[in-house]
Image (tube, rainbow, N blue to C red):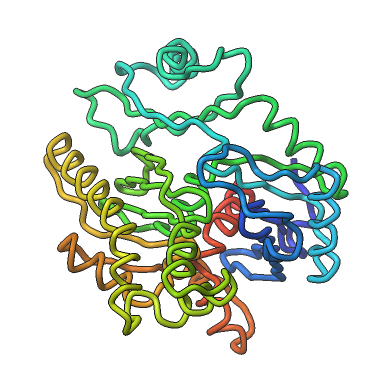
Length: 355
């Protein structure tokens, strides 16, 4: 349907990430080929959470949907965000991701094949989840080999919760998307290399493998930034706020060896998992991971990128998810610092603009 207004007004979309350490919101627009960061806002957990969640507790928070919606509404009003269409990022601990292959078939036959195979990989009854998936683009397929599928399952009760939050916040729910998909879209962009994305969050971490822009694998781990925070606080006998300030400023470059040793003891097991995943990909695909991307709030930890690069013998980058956007020059350094925390938020919002 032709809409004459599209010729004169940019399409706008709001991305929202309800995390365990903060709520992040961004409003972006597209006009022609140009993309603009219109507004953004964030509220930290200390402002609205009663207590940080235990890393092993599965769920978003102890707060009601009504309270979360009011908090979102407050951020929207403070940031002067007027757009109603919103896409929410669903965290990895609220989703189930897997990948498998199906035989070569027509595009029309693929959905039925995915539903047929899904029950073999998902522990919950299919009737209790909503499925989403990515299929290897036809241009990338080797016609002599099976078709690769990346599947996401989200419990229906989680979806209903997000619908309720959007309604209470006065937003039009445009879509919901798994965090891994948003992060990959925001960071990989047009890069055709084989990339490993390490997303270190406040409650859990994910390791995602992207090949030629297609999300192939996603692994979830309990390692999180909160563990680093608590470890530094315990060693230095300071409160969490002081520990956070030290980690942000010093990280792995802290002069006290007892502090850095405590951090390495937590980080090294994650590095071992990354090495295993990278090696597994090499063995299965007969091709190496070419680059490592760090994202999540911990990506800015001083010394972390260099330590990962040295340990993994790979190029390690912390890409700027805002790099393709227009915004006032005065925000350059601010958005660069915020980028690791906003990659999922930007990624899901981009999904709405790309349609």
